[in-house]
Image 1 (cartoon, one colour):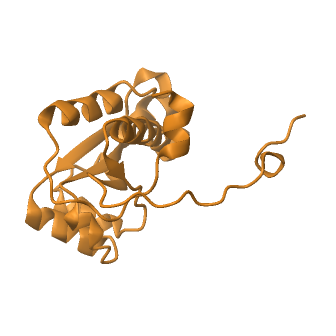
Image 2: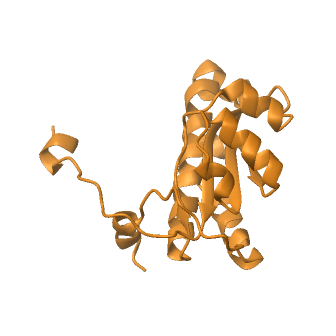
Amino acid sequence: MEILEAIRERRSIRNFQKKDIPQKIVDKLIDALIWAPSAGNLQARKFFFVKDAKLKEDIAAAALNQDFIAEAPLVIVGCTDSRISNKYGERGEYLYSIQDVAAGIMGMMLVAHENGLGTVWVGAFREEEVFDLLNLPQNLRPVAIVPVGYPVKIPSPPPRVSRQEAVEFR
């Protein structure tokens, strides 16, 4: 699969089959997260792979009752690591570490798609609740939730802005 093809074909999936993900594919998702670029190669991020049914339900409740989260066989929570501020100060903590998590998630989502999995990026959640549910240390901040699983169906592509709207050459 070509990368641009994967980018164009990937969809946000909110309805998952009740089918486990083989460990071989989970390992590929982990590799995608680990090998993503990061500011200063500090890798100021940590990802939690949640398979426990009760914890997934609690995360779904904290995510404003987006119940489809609990239906996915795997839920990944991406966290920033504030220790990046030791090198990059406030900008590192409030921007670079978020970019690090985002880069990891995007690569992981493409690897998931390549392996027949569906994902959706969830940003709407009560951060403090997810923090407490995962019993995170103070240096970690949850910034994204990504349910992962085999899609029940693939939706049609949503409309996109034109190239002229998206890009300006100067």
